[in-house]
Amino acid sequence: MNKKIEILKDQAITSKNIGFNEARTLFEAGTNHPFYLIAAASEIREHFKGKSVNLCGIVNAKSGLCAENCKFCAQSAHYRTDAPEYPMIGKDVILEKAKQAKAGGAHMFGIITSGTSVEDEREWNEIYDAIHGIADLGLKPCVSLGMLDRERAGKLKEAGLYRYHHNLETARTFFSNICTTHAYQQDIDTVLAAQGAGLSTCSGGIIGMGETMDQRIELAMTLKELKVDSVPMNILNPRPGTPLMDTAQLSPMELLITIAIYRFILPDKDIKLCGGKEHNLRQLLPLGIIAGCNSLMTGDYLTTPGRDPASDIEMIKDLGLEAILE
Image 1: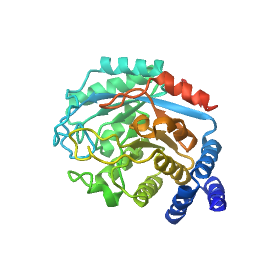
Image 2: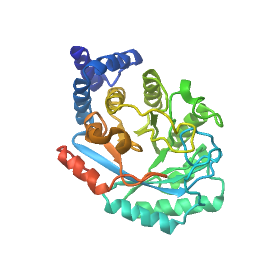
Image 3: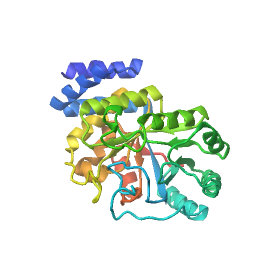
Image 4: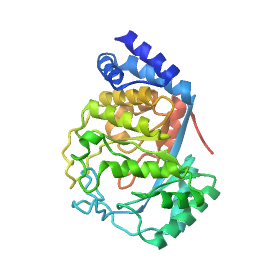
């Protein structure tokens, strides 16, 4: 089994092409030899990404009352949760949060809004102004604003946007178990619209919602086909009041094996460890980077607190790696 991992490691480095069945082999081998798989994934990460780990921060700029029924989400209007509800915050508040993120070491900053899409033109203008302001701070601006068409993507590009974020959340074959208020293809079309406008794209999902390992691999293959630049890996932290509130937690080792397989499938992409990392990986959190992640979301998440950015930078340095500080 170790030899199979070694062969597939060299294949990922030289051809960047690991197929579904090969990824399945990695899962089987990694289950028996997890640390060998993790070490191989670390070699792939270092080959393509060196010793650098980049940090990004976000702000929940518009919270709650979302019409979508995503079963993991505390901001859905379909469920009764304790998530905050408030309208779009102003540019000044967004930029203050961006300044805090930069002080904490972030090199990218994202504006996140709840809802299927942004409809109010006044909100769009506030977002355009905030994008300008984030860029002026020396940060790369990113937004996650729901569904997007090519025309609006072009306007975001003109405003100075660097990256558009839109998660697929899970595999196509599992999606109907998680959301029924929009089609999977709409999410893919949003990513394609952003790419068509020349924007960098960030798209990933949430691990641990009841999907199989085959479906995690399926999601990775879809992201590979879409040629996204960054893949955020969130881990379900069940929110009270949502349909997934009683979902069993995956073991840290299964999560690390999943991260490693993603690095094999997406060898040259940024793989970002995001929401739920502290809650689920617990004492093995640093191994999330060793297993293949070269990027971290730092600070607070949308409706839950995160880690002190200083702790993330300390962890990166303790691993002998370098946080990108711009």
